[in-house]
Length: 444
Image 1 (cartoon, rainbow, N blue to C red):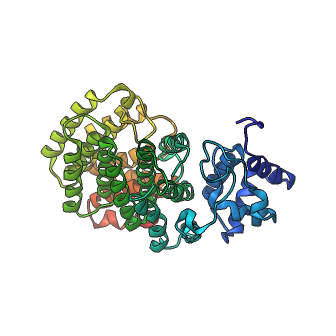
Image 2: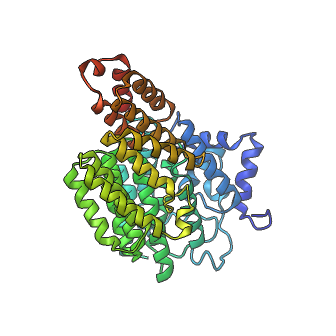
Image 3: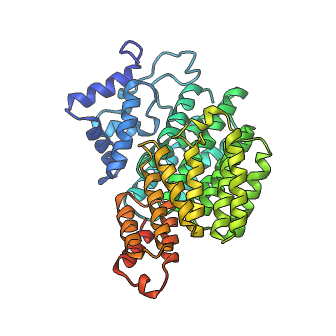
């Protein structure tokens, strides 16, 4: 966005920052300090610095951070963000103005902002998930299902697409603050939107972004919070009347539940729900459901059932449209490396080391370099295959090295537990590397 078209507040934010000699990371730390977060993680600072770029470009208004900006700069928020002339896009709230009236957001915006800061602070400090704060953040979407807002729909489409490109390549937990902020903003937008088609687009963005929040919380070990997010995402997806999206969220939930080690009966119910929603038309949701079913059957020791599920998965994969199979990064795609990943897991868990290693090598060749987490997961599967081949010392050494290489995640905890479970005897389980692996797997 050029200088001529940037809103005045965006120009002011950049000017005030540069006048103080602050880079965007410095600005992020100042904003966190303004809301009481004195020791943000590197990932949190990086994430907020990315938001600052959007704010200073004028693409996104810092509604939840306006007061923090005022504190950081020592300038009243109403001076930083003065009322601007009405435009067709604003339709009710002047551009650059934070509407703080109780009627504008149901009188609870301040409560939701406090909940956001409480959530980010707790997660950044490695504390327990503040469930009340998470419920407050999600409540905006829950309440909005019965209400209406005029907003820039293209912004939310762009934001959702951006999340879909980075959710599996950013470090675990790096997107929590951004996702929570956007969930709050989407709840406000949905409460006021009057156009039916625009509302459906907002619902689609809300469902997808909330599912990504569930993934982040799951990988951070906050399983109950992840489940709560998935429940909301499913409701919102259903309200959007987008069957493909509703199927994908259900399949995503089932897949996460399986990786989390949830009760097999509960996972089975989630899979049945996803299959009923999917029907027989090839889709990302159907492929994800079949993938999870194959992996669950393998974990239960049902080699024949897992092989049949893989065969059905291969048929669906072949029938997927090209735009889905060429997308190697986002959850919206379902490329061949996903199929090879599923084969790798199934065969390594079943102890079929020859086919497991072949699938692992194939998947590693197909993976784009950005998918570092998936590469580590595949190397852990290779270590699991080595355990089945009684190469215990090499397997444990490789597993520990790979578990150390990246922050923990749901998938790495699951595969690490499979390695521990497959150790052949008490002597192997007593090895120092085995004890270290158990410690790494238990960490979040």
